[in-house]
Length: 281
Image 1 (cartoon, helix red, strand yellow):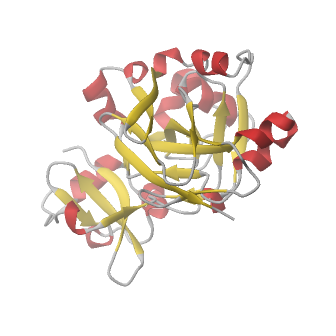
Image 2: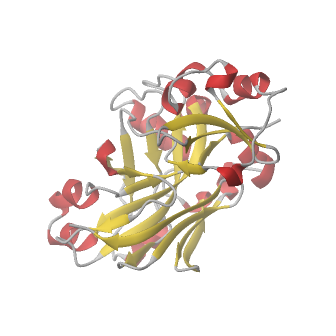
C-alpha cells in the first residue's frame, strides 16, 4: 500500500502531519505513534514504515480537510536555474557547465491554495512549476549512483522569481527569489516507488507550468541538463543535506503572473499544486 506524507489544517487552526492513501483517505500521523510535524515524522519514519503502521487505520475523507504546506521550516531550500535546455533558450541563456543553484529562506514557503503575493518592487514576476526532491536522511559527499537512496520522496513545487529584478544584475538572484510566498510546495510528498510505478522511470516524469488552466510549458526530467541524482550528489559535496531539505530541480518554463491569475504545477502521479496570485506589498 503506497502512502504519502502531508499536513492538514484542523479545527483549531493548527497544522498537523497526516499519512495519505490516495484510494482510502488520510489518518493523523500522531494516531499512528508519530507525533510532531511532518518534518519530524519524515526524519523518523520512512513511507514504508508509515504504510505498515497505517495498515489497519481508520481512514478519513480528504474532502473534509484543507491540505497545507507539508512543513514550514526545512533547514535548506535549494533551487536550480536553467536546468531545462529549452527554458535556457527562452531566456537567451546558455546552460551552465555546473548547476546554477541558489538558496531560499523558509519565510518564502506557502502551501496549496495560499496566495502568491506579487511584490510591489517587481513589475514582472514569474511562477515556475518544478519537481522537488525531499531528502530523507543526512546526505554528505555521496556519489551520483547512490544519491537517489537518500530521497524520501518527491513533491510538486511552484518557485517564483521577480524576473525584472534579476535581469538588472545576476548578482540580484537572492533578492529576486526570496520574497514571501515565493516557494509553494505540496499537497503531499510521494515516494519514488509510486512515481516509478506510474511513469516507469524518473526520467519520464512530465512537469507542467499551468497558468489560468492552460498549459504554459511542459517537459520531462529526461531533458534536464543535470539529473536529480547528479543534483543531489553535487550539492552534497558542497554541504550536508538533512532530512526535509528540498532541492527544486528547475522549471520547463516560467509564466508571467499578475494579481487575479491562478498558477499550477501539474505532475501526474504527484497531483496538482494550485495557488492564486494576489497583489503583495
